[in-house]
Length: 234
Image (cartoon, rainbow, N blue to C red):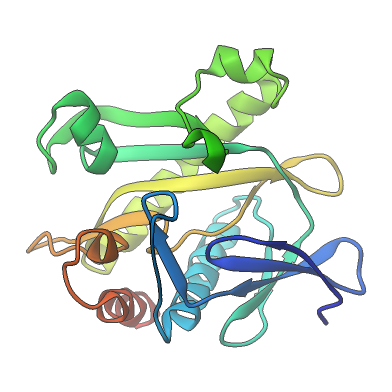
């Protein structure tokens, strides 16, 4: 189905297909941290991320969230709707962790009184800086109505996935989303949702089952991702 390579990022390739409104996303074994300063290729990582992401998108689609996901094609590829990505990272935080803890001096694992939704400009050369809603509108990245839809979708996803992961013995600490415009111009959830883009902790032990295993040299990344896969596919 793949016709032309459109984009290659740190962890995925995007291919055009014979259908102008459908793309193929191919997952890579590469894993990076610190804006690409730490990088490694880990055999089996692509297949785990593709399967986990496909399952999560199936759950979201069934719950009425508009996503770009159509179906998983094989171990490392999925078919998706064409979407023009809005250059924003939407971060949803339920528990203090990572950069949030460092930036605000909050102990990692501390509960938050309300869910945090924050935005970063998607630009590696600038270090993906945080950006306010007024900046987003002023720069023409998207409109105020779009931001309302994105906020609403992000919180809906948080509610669905928090419950989903709890059923499988995991806490959803925080996660990153990306949105795009479909062929009809409507906002939809795109990119991926996987242990690369989520913090997932075991509900009883707080064992990390996400990319922090790689960032912090905590053990085997494929063992951690494999545990997430085993739980959510069971």
